[in-house]
Length: 168
Length: 188
Image (cartoon, rainbow over all chains, first blue to last red; front, side):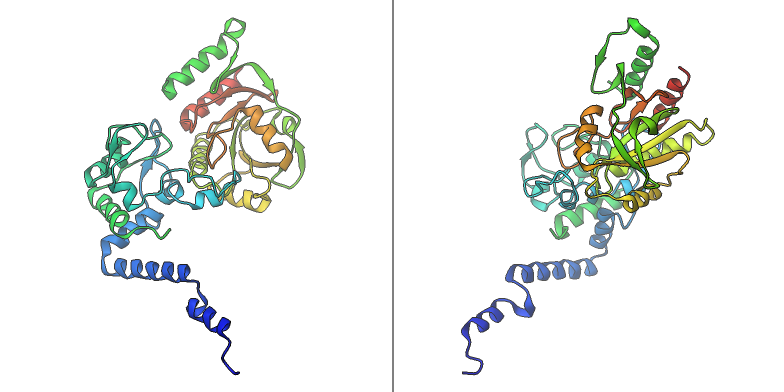
């Protein structure tokens, strides 16, 4: 009977436009994030800073000269991509080089680097970027540059990470 | 220990000769000096060359890296780029060498592109690829292994003109101090 194959109909129903449900949801979330950024220039500015599309000046502690922008991008370390490119690969078990900067990771009380539970707010986030001191007054590793970031840049980055967020 | 103090301590130990304590620390002077193992590498012209031959006759700072590494390797590239600039007027036999630890993921084209991204000048700063089966031996010899996705430390490993490992710097050495260290070793 023409068009009465229930298997085909089920597949079509569960994969609109040829996408699985999870991929479709992810795409919709990404589109929503882009719409939000288009409506909020600060979110877009934060996204550019996070991804390195706008340069951030950063210096390794003890060094005299700042690093070039390609070495100061947040996404260099705070990304799952660093795992995918690693030759270490048991990639499924490996952790990113540095914590993923999710809204939850920043805002929820978490014990970080052996310190007591702490959460970030704008002021402590900016202090960490500039000095390397986290909310619990623990020093972060030297591999992370200390940034010469102004208040507006820092607020944009914070807004992006807590209100926009990197599609993951 | 700060970078300055560690380098000064290393320099002091370098001139202390046989009276210095013999030890192989994670960083600092290597005593006794270690001859580079005869591992075959591929240079950036695609030619096979043994590691000792690549190092002999010049003072070389070696770093481990791979082109897909986005975390520490861009910083390492920046450190060598800064060191290269500081070496602009220095003698020609002070060299920089970036060696991939990912010979399965890296090839000549990727290495050349990575070096070009940091402005490597062929006469001063070269690259090399080990065979896949030799990458672990290289990591072990240098003590350049590190936990995590990058697998390697961000140290520089300095060899003298006799292709002997004589100094392991701390991670991400200050470029000016790395250059000063190389110049001191060149004067020995």
